[in-house]
Length: 173
Image (cartoon, rainbow, N blue to C red; front, side, top):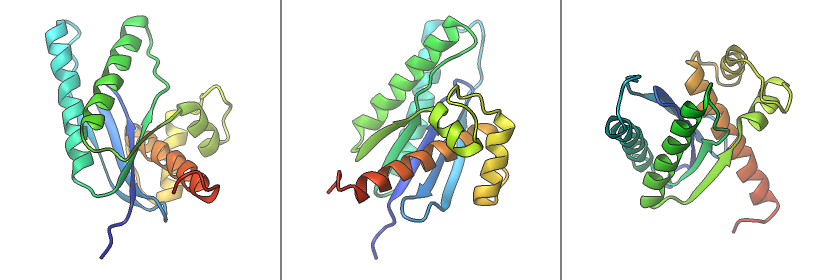
């Protein structure tokens, strides 16, 4: 039996990183979850580095638990302030580093802006509200999930459609 090719969508966050697997061909969800860590506003850099490593290592394990996997990660990194934005950028870099250290077939980056527009009909400003993303996931997959998992599902779905389009265009062998 051949294994079904999957897309792993990741919505990085310092407190609750959502992830979701969907099937490349059918778009059906396979599995989803979150990697949660506690945020200590008084954490020093060593503790922050450890938290980023915990998240990245968990995602690498999740990735390795499946066969042929394409990875899509939210890359529209922004926070309420410069410190949070830098922390999210560092987290994304550590996640990519851990995934690339494993035999990743492809890493695709999907932006929140493109995903939000496709899913909710919002503007390119990426201003779809979280509840709209969750409601759209319920309609698409018939499941109720938290907003970080809904975002991960939509990142995976956006990448899935891009992969299928590239395949149809003959850009991948």
